[in-house]
Image (cartoon, rainbow, N blue to C red; front, top):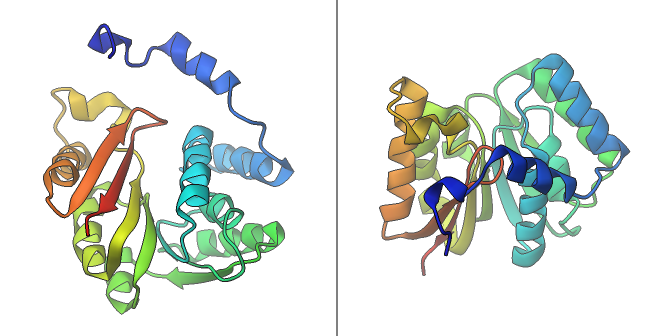
Length: 214
């Protein structure tokens, strides 16, 4: 049990934890540099490492990612999947999706990757499922709508991972704007929905992990 709530995470702790992260290979390092240079919001390295471990433990066969961006998370997830697995991923911007396709092709994943272009709330109803692993990192004001559309397509035991749930700390502060308010409501939703067993962890910018109850 933590001795004080203000000791959950401090800068010196975060910097120390960064030193414990495994080195990324050349492709992921280049993708991180590309994202930083072109201002693409991708998952933090520690979030990538967490997802790597979760996928390795879960061994999912049908994954869905809401928010492809340049394909960083697809590469991270895909490297832990076998040839029988399928990753479906959704991106609105055609140019960004083309960049993602190039990076993912370079990764040489053995699993199948299906890229979907369009707004997530329009694409999700067209996807059949069932899915056993979900990663959400897209429009923050739409997280709850993504969940509502996905829940009927998730099998019992499916894992849902959501990024940016602490939103730079704003969800815990008296900050009110559309994204912050939506994430604050989403956090309450996943931790109280009887269909889910959930926890929000102070990893990266806040990661929610939920399991669909049987």
